[in-house]
Length: 152
Length: 362
Image (cartoon, rainbow over all chains, first blue to last red; front, side, top):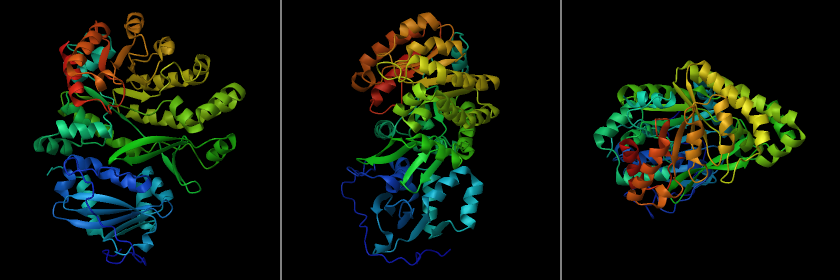
């Protein structure tokens, strides 16, 4: 696994702007944002931490971009973390992104759901390369959010 | 009495020192509202997160503790499957569900049955479904139960799995269920029996973990009455519900059923098979004073406060008056754990606060 400057052999030709359009800073969610599939799952995974202030604290001063991609269940989710906040952009074709995300999680959904079966399937997926992780230092930020105990 | 002792007094038909308050859960929108209007202090957040009770909506135990409820619920999800041909996430009983984000707030939706024909059901079995509940997703709740009990004055987490009917009707569809019930009852029984094999294992696992109260959700009712006719419910569902109860009682735990809608027609059946308490009990759909009078000494009532209108559209004063009136009748001599009937969604925070305060005051 590399540290994430190169994500496979992808070419990137779409830039996610990570803009704050319509963002409600008070409650943290993006007004009018409608998502389905993987982008909705990723958005939801961190929504509560955003609403209660743990996301802001855990990612304060950090900015990064993370692509979460299930190749058999697209669109993928491009997560832009910036200034204690995040946006999720659906990406139909990750190969066409212009700017390369700093980190990547890639696993087929058919394998991902099997990991719910326990530690065994998770370890097996890691050791057999079914799950690809790049940019581990940036991905650690997500773990930090999920384990956060302090609020901004 | 601490919260647990109070709850057990209700379920054992003894007089509690005050009526306990129950929350089934607070949906994403309710959590958003809670954080806007009440929220947690940094010290509370630190402690709750450290204790592992900052769990995700709709079952955030920290919210239930902060709002002074006595008990809440965690229901364990079944194993998921991804169907690469249709690009759908399906649970092991055939239920299609999805998370969607609408106007910035997440919502969980039921998207219909996946097993829409006899051939699909058999093919589903051929690839190994139904499979066991993932214990990895169950284990954290047992630890949370113990923490809540020890550190939060006996706050009690009810745990459980879905019942028999709901996974069945959502997995194969209500129309197909009705068709099989009339034309192929043996095949319908086979589906139920196969589902039960994994449900039984999950219940065994829960009682082995020494959880004192098991609550399983199985919505039998529409607003107008039962979703299937009462004869079919008694033929296909009741025997398995009884087996749920027996497993839980065999482990020394109490069994509570959550079931929405107008279900009073099968209340005698609940009593007959030994259910300890029934939750939801929508007051606009069921004659609760009559149920209390007839069965109140044999089965506890849970929920009973209208969250379709009163908690949504009423004022806190109206809520106090209505809750007092209801609790005085339904909580006479105990036998009541009061609260909303379902996940709190668009109920106002002020009304929920007024409800909890009044429940404890009466």
